[in-house]
Each structure stands twice: as structure tokens, then as C-alpha cells.
Image (cartoon, rainbow, N blue to C red):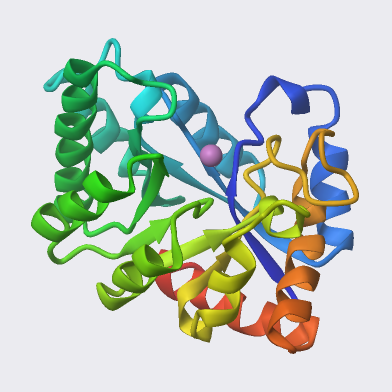
Length: 258
Ligand code: NI
């Protein structure tokens, strides 16, 4: 039984003192592969370097909607394309829309434009996409419908409704499930996890954020992925081994990793 943590930020400074230990602890808990995502050009370069250093690590590169301030439609796009050429870059991400932190409509429009530009990169390079959607479900879906043709990907750390999840699945996109599924107040997520077909779920931690119970509030790390898998197994009446098997298969298929 092996797991893939499909969304992490192990380049975060919270791991600078003990990254090797974090990685070996993950391996001890059968989390043998980890995909780190950048959110700026700088952190995208960092996650590529991590993927060079660790055999089981892969990288996604892109600019997060909350980090678009200095995005240059020529230079930034060029840089992402350059980083994405690395053999261990398996995705464009995390990209998308964040209306929780951004209330200004002009900036929201800029987020949309830059999101679309990065979807174009993914299409050009034939890479899957990892999407950040916070309080922007309607516009995210609209953009994926109009601009997501010939693309595959995942709505990471899914926080929308079941209704929207069904639309996402219909388009062939997956949802990423992480720590919040274990929280007592995770109102909609358990129902969504129960309703999902096996092909439509990815496991992720989003470490260092969103540690699952019983470590909620602490620094998250890939070894905690098992707690997410256990909760999914409990909700769906499956064994953890089954959850490991199909979520690992889904991740390998989406991100073309073996
Ligand atoms: Ni993230």
C-alpha cells in the first residue's frame, strides 16, 4: 500500500530545519511520493529544486491568485514555461481564483485573466492543472467551461457544494480532499466524499496548512495524509487499502507519474 500526497508546500520555511525527517516519516507511513506546488515564480523554482533533490518528489509550477501583483504577461509566462520544461514538473499550479482574500473587482478580473493565461500554458505544454478556488466557485467553473478545453486537472482542497462538485466531475475534473474532511465542522465535505466515484478523488495534505485531526492547528506534513485516507475510508465504507489503491492510481494517471 502506498499513498501520493498530491498537494504540498514542503519548500515552506516551516520545514527548513527538519525536511529530511519529514520526508522519511512520510515514507514510514507509506507516503512514497509528494507533489509540491509553487505559488510564486520564486517558490515554483524552489519546488523544482526539491524535486531534483528527492527521488519521490515532483513539482507543480505557477502563480497563485493571491500572488499576482507583479505578474508580467510576457516575462512571467516565459519563466513558468521555462520551469515547466523540467522532467519532474508534472503540473501547472497552483493557479485559480481567490475571492476570499480579494474583494476588489478590478483585481478579481486580473486574477481571471492570469488564470486563463496559465491555463493556456498548461494546454500548450500538455500538462494537467491544479486549481485553487476559494469563494470563487461560479467564476472558476465558468472559466473552466470556456477556457478549459482539452485540459485535465483537480480542484485542490475542494470547498464548494455537492452540486458544483457534480458539475466538476461531469467535466472530467477531480477534487482534492485534505484535512478539513476530518474536522467536526466540515459540513458539506463528507457528503461530497460519499457521493464521489472512485475515479474522482485525490488525496492531499496542503502541508504545512490544514493539518487533519488529531493534529488540527499544528504544522501539517505528508505523513498525516493517512488520517485523511482513514476518514475517507470510514465515510465510504471502504478499507484504507482500497482508498490508497484508487487514489494512488488516480494521481498516477492525472500527473503521469509511476
Ligand atoms: Ni496549496
